[in-house]
Image (tube, rainbow, N blue to C red):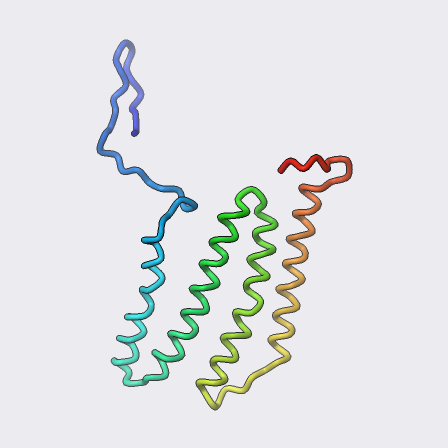
Amino acid sequence: MVSAKPAQGAEPVQCSGAAKIKPPFEMGVDNFVVSAIPIPLLAILSLLLNKSIIFTLGICITLIAIAAIWIIYGIFRKCRKNLWRAFGFALLVLIPVPIAITHISAYCLPQVQYDFTSDVFNSGITLALSLVCFGVDYLLYHRKGDVTGKK
């Protein structure tokens, strides 16, 4: 309900037709439907271009990306109060995503070569950033003399 500022001596006006908006952390199962939007778009693109690899490779990469996004959403939902910890776990989730996409691309497209060096380098940087996030979280919530267990 939204109320307007009343004039002197008047009662507040209540707007009963106002839409109630849910916060992002209280969204239900119906929002999983949004994750299926790329599937028909990839099918249409595959039919228009007459290339089946677009649909096959696109679906595999889309499923990996959607799974990672929902896992990260769950992490941030669980760690609402500790954003640095949530960022650290989110970065850990992101480590296998490019590796899986590279493997799938190398499998589906024979002209693409698998480059192990870039995967190790990217994973190392992501792991380092994750450790930095965990370190910041530790410094913020576990300072010397501030180990009360309250967060």
